Length: 511
Image (cartoon, rainbow, N blue to C red):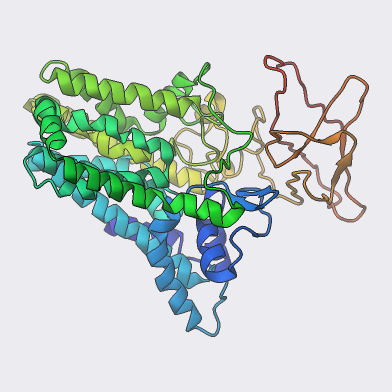
């Protein structure tokens, strides 16, 4: 925690309040944090100003595409920070002052600390010895992306999921070991909060047999015998879950809404290998210490078949769901961030493996953990000084930057898909525009813009037909672009495939 806090203060709490707000409230965080701004500052929930990252326009109001769980977890810290901001005459009162940002950062530290304590208690209850716990915490704290998404990206949902899933598993273990049935109510509320933070994390129910092992059947019989408590737990969970329908109704007047129009799962073509070992976000490549979890799962087949098959099922289903999402690498980020949510489960077979190792293998494993931590911390530094590309690493780029620290490698990986020798002198962004075709764009214009159901950005898309030779154009008036410099233009787009199987669409850019 001391190291995490130091990295936050030295790496995030720098510059003015606008710098810190830009560093924290970006990408997905705009949507999570947007709930707090809309509800408690602007009072415009359902009528928010358009932001392409998360605001969806509907005939009955604006819709925040994200679920509200992360906002709920940030809310008490936001309240503290905003109260301080209101008492500071120099601070902005839009929710983006340095006071709110620092409060959100401190909140992330708190949730990490609670999550680690809960995980430690869980593993102690599973018979893991103290010496193994020390090394597991070292591996988790310095060898995984949990440090990145606590210290430097505290607004993302992952540290909150890590905390609540750790608490949920601890409560389940308490019930398994004979704890009072009233803990069912806590478990029901925690499960609902897990779903509100990230709905697919409801698959954490698959981890119950991993925790229970041979006690699974007696545990289930005992739980089912407490019908009143089970019903109360269900009501507690539904009460927490009902917050989301209430927010949907407040925004667009409907009790159910789907904000991910144009996004979804490709169940028939999951990118499993890329998710696990790919150079872009591969779990075992960018977080090699978690290979001990995979080995531990295989190890369990020698001593506890129930836990082994349950853990294999947990791995299989969650990897399949993660890799089937349309953007399987989950945007820009350091490593495979979505697996941070699953760390509390993934460390269980890792702990049991380490607990059973003989002296020689125990020494070798500790050396491996140290090397994994060193590599991850070094690559995290590379990521923040722009030696590693934030969006699209590949085999060539990984080899080009591996263990490099010279200044000449900073910013050398320019465009997302630029081939070697990349960009040896670095580049500055001189002009940038995102256009969703719902509003007038400054630089993009042309033919083919039509109202299309299912469009990613709202209700419009550019349609290319047989008789249309040229669609969009990008124009910049004289004097806007710098002279005397080589210019590089990068274009990204979301493609709506109206006829399944059409894969020969090309984007032609002539300058």
